[in-house]
Image (cartoon, rainbow, N blue to C red; front, side):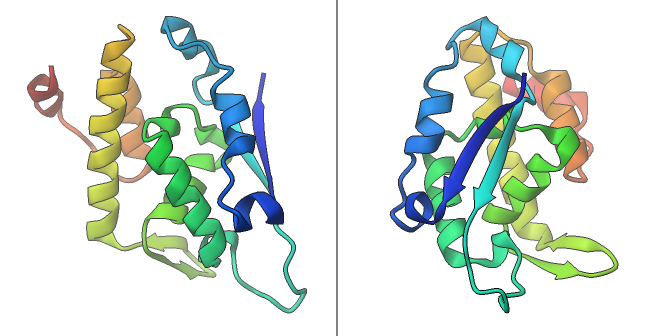
Length: 158
């Protein structure tokens, strides 16, 4: 079952997290949260002028909304549907990047490294509080973003 958070100009321009809160706050807070792992998607209905060529992650108002969301739910990437590119799109909302027609999103390497490590720490702690093993999940998430984390790194977190 896919979970969809629908955003529009009103919610984004007013930094209103209500559309996300309704979905996220309805989820279980215990081990049953694993039923929703990689099930979350965003549907962004942000109206702009037809001549505006920017991607959503290049629009400051949308990025600011995602920064606020990430502050409220730093573990949210755990729920994102990685297979459909939601993790990459979410990351683009928070990490400085450029677009290349041939290569797609090119993240600032240092900013991406900081983002990945911050997410690893936040999600590892969040999963630990729920008694959910995290090593494989976190290694997979890091790999999607281009990082291979050694098991010895995770030994330090336990």
